[in-house]
Length: 227
View 1 (cartoon, rainbow, N blue to C red):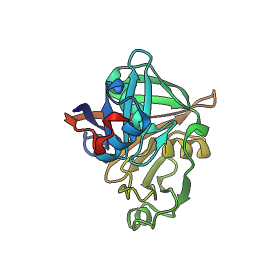
View 2 (cartoon, rainbow, N blue to C red; view 1 turned 90 degrees about the vertical axis):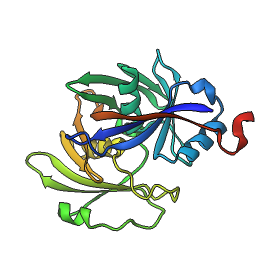
View 3 (cartoon, helix red, strand yellow; view 1 turned 120 degrees about the horizontal axis):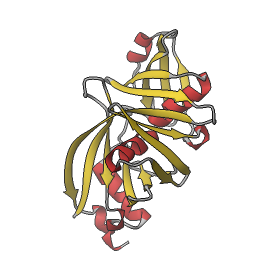
């Protein structure tokens, strides 16, 4: 039995919505990549993060089908849970800060996986979109109020792994912020909220509210405990 916690990351102002995240605090319980991949697939969240060294903030991130060097919502969630001021990912060191109920991370745009940032004319167009066929990772967005920097977005991973739409995607919001070169307030999915901003050192901050959902345990999937 492997213990894990479930968080919601990038919750809305009322504490609702947010993207679910599985967190295994004791990464040593599942040391192998095959074990971790199978466990992430079993949980079925868009991402699951394994904490390998809580004092150093060393983490390892998986979708149901692949390992990621960096991802936004797992880093924000892990930083909140650990109370960390930095995380160590395979992509590099991620700074974190906690301020007024928000947890923010700072990362380099080039660490984010490639995304197609597709602009639409209105928020209503984005809201009316159907899930596209698999094959392309699409971040659909439109200005709600360009002067105010508010954006409506939806994310379609296109991986054919059971995650047709990602409720809140920190890495994609980071890329959009880098492209536009300005601070943004992004409403994504059903009502999640991401707050972003470029920094003068070339990093981009992305953050939001985190809520704890539950703690639980799951059997190792597919007999991979011997891997």
